Length: 170
Image (tube, rainbow, N blue to C red):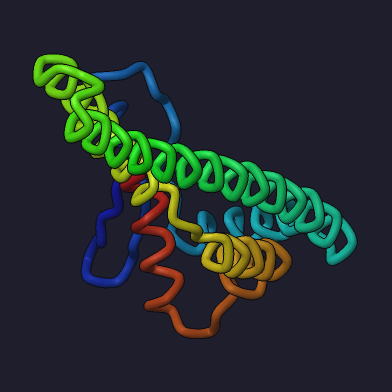
């Protein structure tokens, strides 16, 4: 869908696929005012009432809380394993100094530990918490979902034009 202004006064939308005969679309030209009216009706239809938004919000926040619990549990396991490996490395070195293991055994075990440590450290870096950002995003999205019609009905024509352009390009 694209728009065009005729005679510098009339802006309308049409299906470019049908116009160029790349598709079998037979939608007629539609004045921008008619399309905006249809979009306003669609926004009113899609808009969530406060109760539904609150219900959806509670479920989303429960999911975020479950995710955070799992993340904390995983972080705890990773930190425990990191401590275990550090202790193993120290014990190996002491065992080598006490002539309890050979140099080859020390090298083999140090290589194993040296391979696992960076993996754990990398996992710890990527398991950082973004819970508060997720909570804010849920709140913002639900706030918008309860005000869709009002947002689209913004008296500033340029705001509506931006939304229309966004809809037609995505």
